Amino acid sequence: MKLNIALLAGDGIGPEVIDQAVKVCDAVAKKFNHQIIWKPALTGATAIDAVGDPYPDETHEICANADAVLFGAIGHPRFDNDPSAKVRPEQGLLKMRQKLGLFANVRPTFTFPSLIDKSPLKRERIEGTDLIILRELTGGVYFGERGRRDNGNTAFDTMIYTRSEIQRLAKKGFEMAMGRSKKLCCVDKANVLESSRLWRETVQAMEKDYPEVTVSYEFVDAVAMRLVQWPKAYDVIITENLFGDILTDEASVISGSMGLMPSSSVGSKVSLYEPIHGSYPQAAGKDIANPLATVLSAAMLFEDFNLHEEAKAIRDIVNRSLVEGIVTEDLADGGKSYKTSEVGDWLAKHI
Ligand code: IPM
Ligand code: MG
Image 1 (cartoon, rainbow, N blue to C red):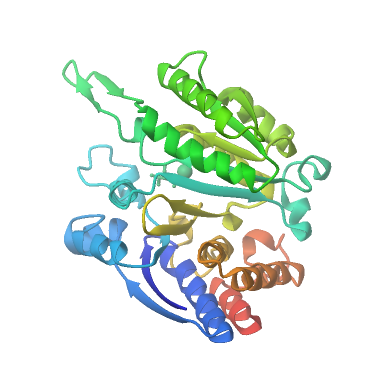
Image 2: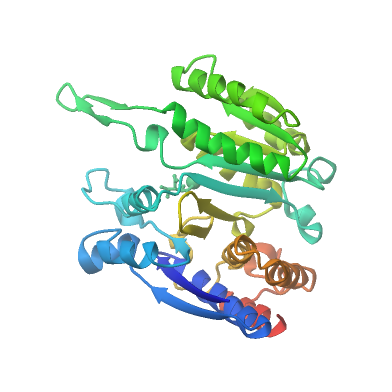
């Protein structure tokens, strides 16, 4: 297969972890006889510095014409500490999600047998966890009307959803549940929010189309607690944008490190693959960041092109690296650790 992949390294540790994923993908391509053509493009603070826009039109062109997008991270502390900044790197990410129509963010949570004891949660609670949070990505409070009034002394953000936005996300959730254990949990705050009541009403109306799927409805605050208390209660979770943002960070604790959790964002033609961790600026340029979340995101990419063996080869080699202790310092427990680039080299070599 020939794949054109837009490569958006972004900011912070983005370029370092992306480099490792490229090495691994190239090794997979060689082994399985595929051709990958990488199309690098600017995004985030790096793009603001270069051209004044965190998601330039040129980058959008490259993404829109690619078969897939592999994305590192965006964000820079100099913007975080300046609430008055007019252009922010994160706007690039939101613009990209919207312009590419990436309305569903797929964030799997699973455990690695060799790392169970790295999680702050007890082994018996998390062992065997295998859930997916399907987060709505182009609506809700991220994209609703926001502003200030009363001379800047009052601020507002609007959580807004249309029935069709909920339906298209929920449809993916139901379909995903059909391919798994046929359990779907809709997470909302319908005891308070009108938009959540529309979510619940919409999903309830869709139940009849998927009679085999058992649907539960839970409030987000309760799920925040149960997710770490008994994650095995969940299989596929569907939820709106902000709730999903928060719950997926929380869920990463189950696996023991945020440096391990991949994601895909899907919707229209082109899908995007990215680690769920951010730009981790404190580690930028130090060659210490964990590249596995990005490498595993690349596995999700292959999976979506029905290249199952290729995806499995990546997951297997990642598992082997964990078992053999070829890990970055976040997983080394003060023992021997490897540089980001060394882990990438090892993975590529052993593919
Ligand atoms: C994520 C991130 C982004 C989000 C930020 C960087 C805008 O936290 O992908 O989860 O909130 O969606
Ligand atoms: Mg987040």
